[in-house]
Amino acid sequence: MLTFEEKLQIIESFPELQRKEVSLGRVNFHYDESIFDKKIVVQHLHPNGNGFVYAGNLPRMDKNNKGFINIRDYSEEALRSLIKQAIHSLSPQSDAAKELAIVGDGYEERWINEERQSLLLIHEDEWWNVYAGLNLEEAFGSYDEAEDYLLDEGFTKHK
Image (tube, rainbow, N blue to C red; front, side, top):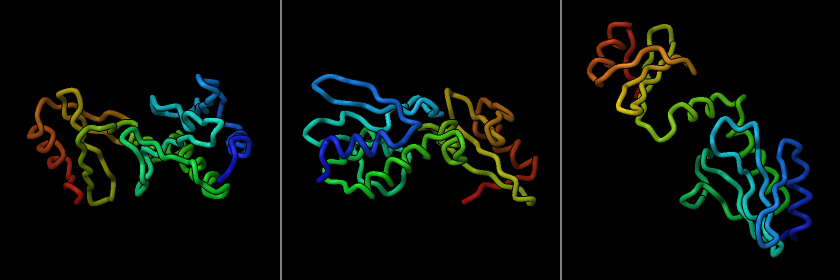
């Protein structure tokens, strides 16, 4: 197991993270460039070596209900890899992260036309919104209206 100091050294090697002191000698590290409300990448790194890394946007990870993974027993290589993935998942350069920022927890469907162009249909705040990339294309009061529009425009639901 890495010590607190070793974990600090690894985490501080990521210049995009900002250190924030919290209670009981614990430390958080924030990623201020995150396109999500979520800015904390490393949470409650404790002098006893315990701590958590945010992995809420990462697939197939054993995370708690808040999207964090306990890093108590992580090796240097595993910790570096996890932090790099976490930063990337929150980064504005990641297309997947951009879509997740729009979709959030809402219901979504992807629609594709013959030219392989894709639109997202997302149910949010009682509206059915159609997005082309990050841009809102149209908004509808019902699913049926949105579906009719997408079909009229030559799109089919992607499975």
